[in-house]
Length: 251
Length: 290
Image (cartoon, rainbow over all chains, first blue to last red; front, side, top):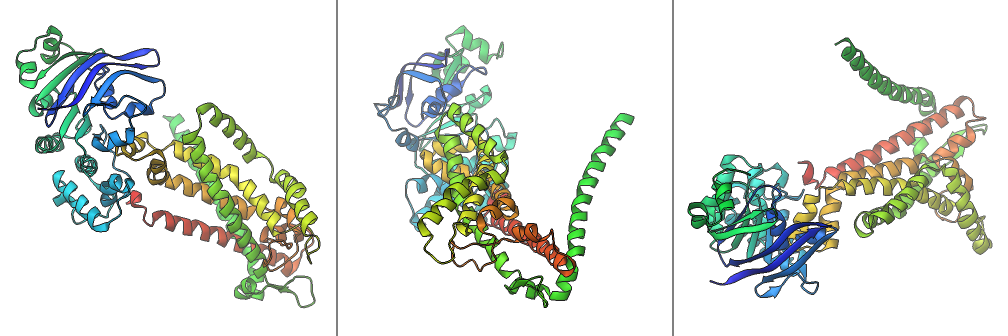
């Protein structure tokens, strides 16, 4: 297997507060990595480093290397727009644009200048099929995305990210705003998608991490405590803090 | 418990009072204006340009003044809406908070100054300029439709900027993040997502701006020359519906007075049309309201 991300000595500060401390981690191609840990442990912050979303936050300072396909994306010379095309993101709250379903899916490709109607049509169909939403919405592609249920909206956001044909999908607690049935659907979808994409998912639910991920990283107070195969983390953690967390002693 | 009933009644009385006042205004204008509409005819009033209210055979054609109002409103909004939207985008997304706060402070003061002061400014700048450079043309004194348009644009600009800035700031950051996360650049994010998400606020800004522009009276009178004219040349003097009411009400009586009230009715209808058109535009293609 190939390392798609290689993070070396990553440190991050919000103003004077250090939010990530010396994180080093390698992420393999085509697998699902779950980031777990209590609130405020830095897992979402870490995730947002991977597509430079922290650029939007004033006073955020990042040191260290984030190698994506062997290129350091944590440098001014690396174009963050190129990065975000290859590293898509799905957010905690479903956030479809106030447009039609169709327009939502083609948003990314259109921003890259794609205008051919046929190509756009096929992107919409393929992306929605991959996101297991096509059958739900194929008859109302041009009605508002905001009329969909929460779970459907989140799958639309996944379809919208897939439409860019990224290598990696970052998911920031994608099911925390959804009901159990919609959550199951998203988890099934993640299982399907991992054939084609590397998926890095932040989750509050350890059961979810255990169900869907190949690897699990446990964060605590801005530090990466343990990173290993999910089976190992849950059955046989090496660090006692990890064990305390997954057995529910805190967090 | 009694306290709650008391306050509930207070709220209800307030809203009843406000709606009743509005209703009274409408009834009053229509009652006063109706005799002119009946005597002279509504159609004739809006399609005839001849306004001779004190002649032996008076005629109350409002066409030229209606056109002046429409043309000056549209042209001034064509200046103030794009500038207003662009500057609000710039303030919200392109400058730092400190500069934004300073500029917003100035804009809010400008929104509050009496429009006559804007009129002074235009009188000393645009009107003087036109007089100095075009005095040789027939009918040009500087006081003109063009000057009126400048007054109206300047006057509506602060309102439009303030409301646009507020609505852009209210756009949920999740839309911005979603757009940037999809590889869109800053400009694409602003125009394709943020302005779209702020649509209803921006339409509100336009409605408010248009309302101010149509209703403006004194500052326009100050610079427009106040002569009734078909608005075919922007350098010639003009008179809008509101200026007409303000100019003539002091000495009007009888049917003449009724005709002025009737121009109030027409103003009222024009504002209604603007509101309805904008509402339709907002809902059309507005999948966000689906």
